[in-house]
Image (tube, rainbow, N blue to C red; front, side, top):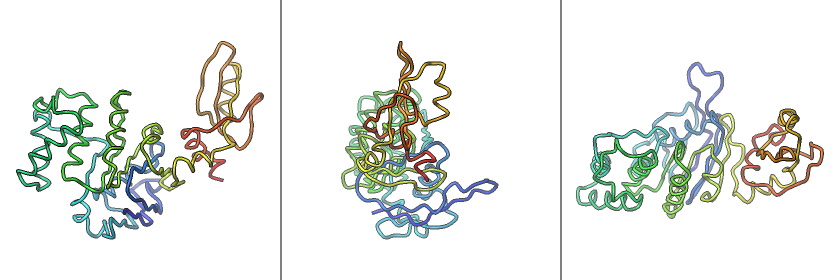
Length: 291
């Protein structure tokens, strides 16, 4: 059980807090943390990983105060930061072995865990290759392997699919779903599709604050009746984008097909449509929803 209590973080010289009175309680499964760039996701992940100290507030991991007792949290933590670096001259097996020793794993256990993790992320065939020749997706798989080496119960991954091709993104999401049993997995991203298929609940952030924390189904219900479809001439596209929050644009021979979120129908010829999770996310990040 992870319980976040009124976390705040103010960086020196910043005009606004990176995190402001943030509270959240989550249990087993994948929790998707959604928000635009600058929403405070990375700051929150860094605090929970005990890398950054909060200005105020705390968090409890299975009842243990993570701010006062960071070592107790690190003992059960697996962390994949947004900028994950590797030693390019080491092979995947050497790199994981090195990190396993830093984690304090016994040699016999370490050899077994390294082999298991290489199997889990489908890298046994490349275990003897230097990491400098790995693709971005393969490096990310090494990243999740090192995060899971110590069989952690709290797994934090920050923007793990940035720069990955579609096939690698799907593989990575499936892997997160597989490891979620018996663990709390926090997946921080600004890409809605990364959490849509795997998250049991979704927390949405804006300007360092929690906007909503609900199941995907509940978020879809909140957006029901606020998503519309309309067609406008190309020359009126910019005007329509200023008038409403547009979630998608498809250009067709007869004009531009828009999908947008709003309190009510706002463009001529609009018809109501069923919301997607991306629509719900956009709705909750508009001024209308905040009001």
